[in-house]
Amino acid sequence: MGSESALLWGLLFSSIGLGFFVHGKKQRMIVPFVCGLALMAYPYFMPNAVTLVLTGLVLIAIPYFFRL
Image (cartoon, rainbow, N blue to C red; front, side, top):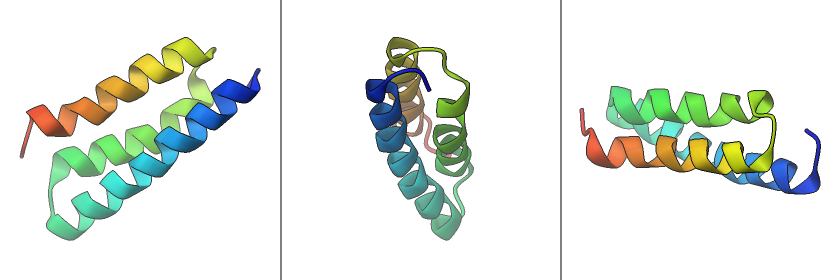
């Protein structure tokens, strides 16, 4: 993590990912479960805050459009 903003965005998206993960596990829904795992893991691999935010927004939107 190069900057404070990337650290804070990563914390925010990881927290949202934890919520998706728990919801997907309890409801036995695969899409929120996988998106939750991805949201918790991807901040470690993003080079800057802009790509972190864009990827996070896409991962948050996926369970809204694909309800499986």
